[in-house]
Amino acid sequence: MLHADPIHRSLLVSTRNAHKVEEIREILGSRFLISDLSGFPGFPEVEETGSTFHENAAIKALAASARFEGWVIADDSGLEVDALNGAPGVRSARFSGESATDASNRTLLLEKLLSVRGQARSARFRCVIALARDGKVLANFSGSVEGVIIPQEKGAGGFGYDSLFVPEGYCETFAQLGADIKNTLSHRARALSELKNWPHWDRP
Ligand code: ITT
Image 1 (tube, rainbow, N blue to C red):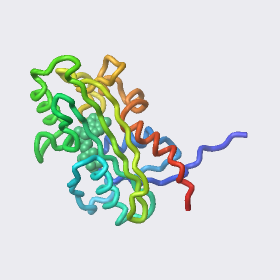
Image 2 (image 1 turned 60 degrees about the horizontal axis):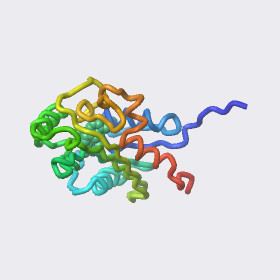
Image 3 (image 1 turned 90 degrees about the horizontal axis):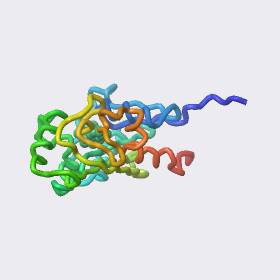
Image 4 (image 1 turned 180 degrees about the vertical axis):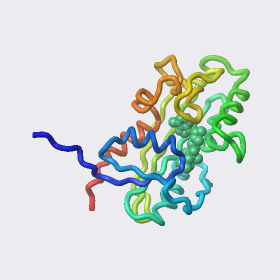
């Protein structure tokens, strides 16, 4: 007998980053109905004052959970470059200043790595997802993917630092590999795989 794939969960993602939302929707598939803060223009900007991905994910998840019923998730993510002692890390979105863009962040990263060669350009993307409900964080899920930063941008897909990051085992950047491949091996895919397997979804 055929069964329709039911929608089990509605999840509000505490973000206005459309790229993240698109990836989360694609990775989680039809068992989750995803919405985000773009539908709530009055929702205030949340200041990310934490010094770790875990802290910032919790801050963003709790801000939304204080105002909305139901399941809320927040994704805090970024790039850690070994030659820069883990920078930009939690400051990935604002690496080149308060009015940073993805393009200005990539330019600054390339400048800082000008004299660094080969395997010394190692880096990883990290993602921590906080799951909240009724104003409490119930769980955290994390994922990372190792790779290297190449000396010039390649590829037009993705967002953020995707056109500079070649994941381990591949010869192309996330931007060249495209969503189908990125979403099977990325930091976000790995964190969301833990979320899908969270054993307490059916708890009342
Ligand atoms: P929200 O806080 O509203 O979710 P944000 O863009 O400010 O959106 P973060 O604070 O988590 O998100 O910063 C993440 C930054 O790290 C993001 O802006 C990118 O520059 C980078 N980043 C994270 N995941 C990435 C990915 O999959 N590909 C490329 N860059 C990524």
